[in-house]
Image (cartoon, rainbow, N blue to C red):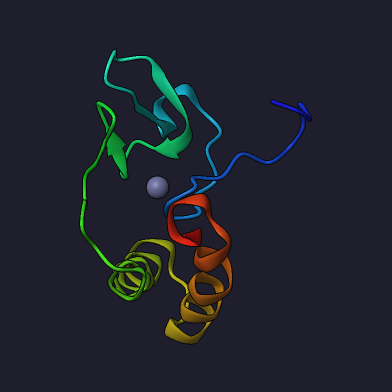
Amino acid sequence: MEVLNRKVICQSCGMPMKKEEDFGTEKDEESSEEYCCFCCRRGEFTDKGITLNEKIEKLVKISVEQLGMTEKQARTLAETQLPTLKRWKE
Ligand SMILES: [Zn+2]
């Protein structure tokens, strides 16, 4: 990792990862450096095949229900952040 105090966010959903448990796992059970525990388990995406738009919808729902954001806030954040993440860039 180039900068130590760099904010580490999941490269699939944008969730900030702070604790060891927040990170997903690789095939060999090592913790993933790029994806969170909700997106990646044992080197596979838990929601493999999902499109960027579907992921945005899913995330908006979670942010509203669990983080108490307004739908507008959540949507703006997801639409701004997700397309910049590694998983969705190609
Ligand atoms: Zn994630």
